[in-house]
Length: 230
Picture (spheres, helix red, strand yellow):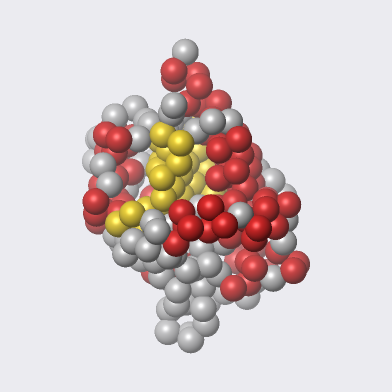
């Protein structure tokens, strides 16, 4: 059975605004259930371990989806989520791929987290897929390839757009705009219409634009793992 490590934020504060944040629940539930249904074994990790903060906005009625509703009734997965491993205690060698759900929270912890940066570099250099959705491509900001340049340099990538950030009125709150950072780091950034599903695969690197892209990223990750196994 192929094993996938999910890495989530431990940060529940949006800078010094006083607003709560965390990870976006749909970006966890959609890939989690998609990959579970295909028979993958999933382990969850966070910088601090234990229960990661769920962005309150992602639990609103407007943000509800079939997979978030499934999660609301799923005591077993709720328990797994409440007991995540500490990121410093997980090893790339134990997994076949890594996936990062998004949400604004990670902009203030995982982006600069040395364990996270090393983990992604280790997965990639070992020929294992690395996948990100919505805001989580932000964690690639400080990740380097084996040649010492930014991992995204020269690669096809996507992520939360400047237009989507403006629509949620957080352009002035976030530490940096994800679309701009990916371009500045040399990524071949592309996007579709705001809030539409869109995912890009470039070798071992898989990125998705927004919450609606979560399942697309999971499907591409599953296909990549299956193709590497065959």
